[in-house]
Amino acid sequence: MLRFLAGRLAVAIPTLLLVSVLVFGLQKLLPGDPALALAGEDRSPEVIAFLRQKYQFDQPLLVQYWIWLKAFASGDLGTSVRTGLPIGAMVADKLPVTIELSILSMLIALGIGVPAGVAAALNRGTIVDYLVGVLGLAGLSIPSFWFGIMLILLFSVTMGLLPSGGYTPFFESPWGNLKTMLLPSIVLGSSSAAIIMRHTRSSMLTVLRQDFVRTARAKGLPERTVVVRHALRNGLIPVVTLATLQLGQLLSGAVLTEQVFGIPGFGKMIVDGVFGRDYAVVQAVVMCAAAFFLLLSLLADLAYAALNPRIRT
Figure (cartoon, rainbow, N blue to C red):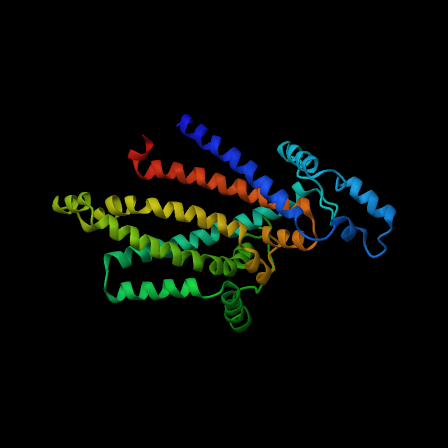
């Protein structure tokens, strides 16, 4: 197991370095001078020169990259040029919000997608399979921002059951936190549920045709045992990969949903950083998202071994 983890880390570290090069290099290709944006309306030459020296904008690109990478490796994410706050503190404040939203969304997606996919596979060609297919296509087709607005109109404006936006910290009020996170979690989880549903159905149809499933049935095992202990356990292996990728996409792609519901998360932070030309914030957010993606990939590999012992060798 240690050798397996070491091999994964040997791949993850160069990947993270490549991401850092792409993030730093591509961002420098953006038009405009960040020193001019920070100088304000007066834009006196002295202020511009001071800002370029303070944030190393006057250094060569390789020098700027090395200074930033060395600081990032030591845990110093820098300071936001827009707000003047330490980026590490900003990430520590915003990242848990988006992680909570992503995990709740994935729980909803798995709670809907896996049972629906299994039901469609077990009832292939019936009305159940048809309805699951229609729901899956609808989940993929409906834009998240429109779906979010419709949920606000129904549950907040019309019925008054849930708040239309905002965020309540969990430790301040667990019930209030759940109410503020429920609608955005449903919005994000619906599209992921549709994808997981379709892949679960396809994987289960493949597994149900395997010899070991026919053997289990020939032994006289109950159908529930055959499906849950034999077919589903093997059919979930590709779904684990998909769920891992979807969770990473939820973490980095919750921008629209956070904007619609006014959630102060990671997505809003990166949008503000891009429009404010706050290079350090954008770099830190993307690097944190990439590291989280690599961590999820490692956890997915470990889950493979738990689901199928043959993979351990």
